[in-house]
Image (cartoon, rainbow, N blue to C red; front, top):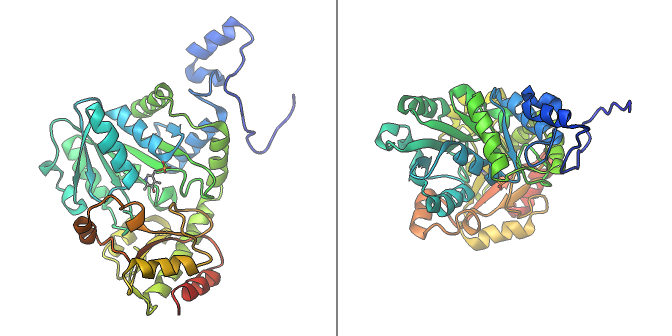
Length: 379
Ligand SMILES: *Cc1c(COP(=O)(O)O)cnc(C)c1O
């Protein structure tokens, strides 16, 4: 065959052939298998292309693993670094799915987690135990976009001899490079910005060093966390426009945030690109390319479920769809989804009120977004 496709084809195969025992031997003994593949649970050209591209964008010399969902990536990171008896620390404002994985499932397997308010987590010496192996934190929190001081947390982790895992799903490598702060691993729900089109579920975790990257690949294979070839291919296709998309998401979101901040129906806008956001200076110092991402939350003056529902029913361009980061805008309702199980008093303390709406701003023509938001807010 003399076919030279410009784009990597989809290797939709579970297994690869060998012509002889010598070739099989070569697979098992040659460095990097001499370019050979054997079984797609362990490796597949499409999955490799995805991991290599994310590792390149993150500056991750150790490479890593792609998983069948974002949460599979967290499981890989925990399995690669912890065993029964070990302990993990996280900020309180953690993504709900991560909390469920850690608290409901990992605790059962003997790995415990404590949650600390982010502002107090930097004082890591107060919280670490002799068994603490991992700190997990997000660059921008959900839904109020609290900004992490990544270099400060990374320095505290280094001092305590604990590995730092950063969930960069809200930011992508266009906005942050957590390994450059000294994090050990960076994790993405590739379902979000890396894929970017709301049509694939995937996760990627990459590591700064070779040994940890190797361990991530091992646990990915051994626990069967593998991402399928088609999903890998779709995510690679998404990555090709990541830079363009993140620019447009961020530009649109800043315009939307300014519009909403000046709107009479809106009490408060949480967007790190606004000068009024408490994390603005930190975001400006830390986020790359002058971009602040596409995620924000908005509290209505009519801070009730009825007020929020009126918005969800009227908007045409921000459909209520509880995920994020697609090219098409969407909205979600923290009180009814991510923070459903959080007790009322605690929710109030966190600022998750009945009239709080989270927006994922897409890459559409911004004037159309502003017009839709205006009519949906009854202005
Ligand atoms: C969606 C999300 C996850 C989990 O990813 P899935 O692809 O849904 O498994 C983890 N962290 C953050 C911040 C997310 O938004």
